[in-house]
Amino acid sequence: MNEFLSVLQSRQDQLLQTLWEHLQISLTALLIAIVISVPLGIILTRYPSIADPIIGVSAVLQTIPSLAVLAFLIPFLGIGTLPAIVALTIYGLLPILRNTYTGIKEVDPALKEAATGMGMNTYKRLTKMELPLAMPVIMAGIRTSMVLIVGTTTIAALIGAGGLGELILLGIDRGADVHLILLGAIPAALLAIFLDLILRGIERVSGKLGFKSLLSVVLITVLIVGVPFLTKNSSQADLVIGGKLGSEPEILINMYKQLIEEETNLTVELEPGLGKTAFVFSALQEGDIDIYPEFTGTAIVTHLEEQAESNDAGEVYEQAAVGMKQEYGMEFLQPMQFNNTYAVATTKELANRYNLETIGDLKTVEDEITAGFTLEFTDRYDGYVGMQDVYDIDINNIRTMEPGIRQDALANGEVDVIDAYATDSYMVELGLVTLEDSENLFPPYQGAPLMREETLKKYPELEAALNQLGGKITDDEMRQMNYQVDYEDRSPQAVAREYLTEQGLLDN
Image (cartoon, rainbow, N blue to C red; front, top):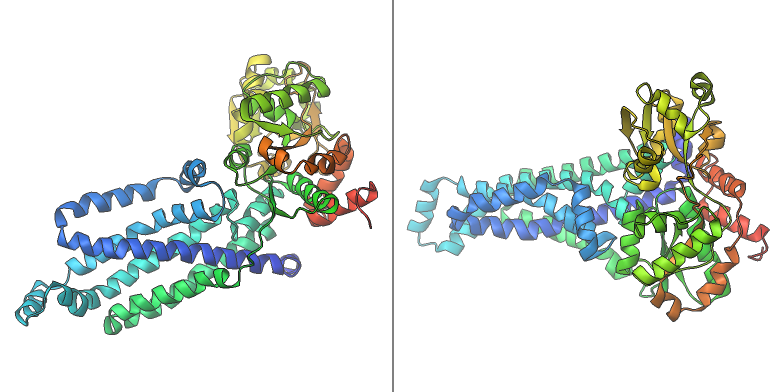
């Protein structure tokens, strides 16, 4: 408990910021869902023959996995809050639409006839009688939609939309840090409960207030959602630098930002934790970000869908740089020294028990061991696909998991081998053994700034500023910086500045 309170105190500013972002995204999606669903529900009561198909479509949309919806929207809407709001709105439609339709349809027919007999036209009957009587049911649908949206908003952090999901993802990436996960999960749950209590109170008086209760919900939501637009600074950064999940990308993008702002007149905004390789690369292609640190081996195998023609780091960089320019019109600046290559790791105990020294040695125990691989590793040729081909390995039991969980699974004995990165801090913390890649399956993975050609043409000064990192940062230096962020809870910004200052690239 004391440790959790310590984490809460040290991250209270981040918590307040992500909580506010979470509230903004959730209420925006709820507002749009209300604006769409309530009028549509009313229309369907007048045309009941099409009601079931339309409500059925909204039900089908709600069954689509949220991550799949986000991934589908990225090519069209990019990353950030817009695709997140669209996806959340889709999830919030069904409860409101169904309850609006049901609430109005279930109004006693005798009352409708009486209203008509009193001379009310369709509009007056709707506003004076049907909607007031149906309002408690409609408000119940809004409550259900709201809880659903608030809970799903946590996954929006995967595409840079912010919110409390950032803390949860950070906790997972830090080796399932329970305190960070709870720091994101508990406020998300409390936010849902708090909003539910407010809507429950409005629901109780909605029978008396009628349509005014719905208007009050809409107006309150509009006011909260509109605050950022009233207070938003009109200035916009010249460049947006993104990064994948993890401490290493976040350290590197902070180095990029500090060097650019030190050496040029450009301003930089950071978008850390944007998810896996495919998400971040798509964001770069679509122009949602301008730069991100990519690895030479990943560029060749994943983006160019080729195999490295050499295991020499310089030749791999040339292949990646030429290929990315020809295929995508992108520029790779000079790479750093460290090689964050893929590795297959295990504990010293298990390596000694089975006499494991190389990746090929896994062939003898492929039916006895359990592997803990990331989804990305299992689907890459410079990963398990290549291991099957090059080493003729077919591990009987593979459990896929997020990168931040696999080291704990190995330490707890839940899996026997994992895929790892050479500069990950837990390699030192857990004293893991790396199996030799005797067939050179994994090419060199040197990090380098990747950007579109037009970005470099517009800001040619970026090359000199960022190439100061070329050839710098050894494997051990990168491991130590990752360790400081992952295990000592130092901020990536402070770690980045400390390194650049020590190297004479920034003034004290």
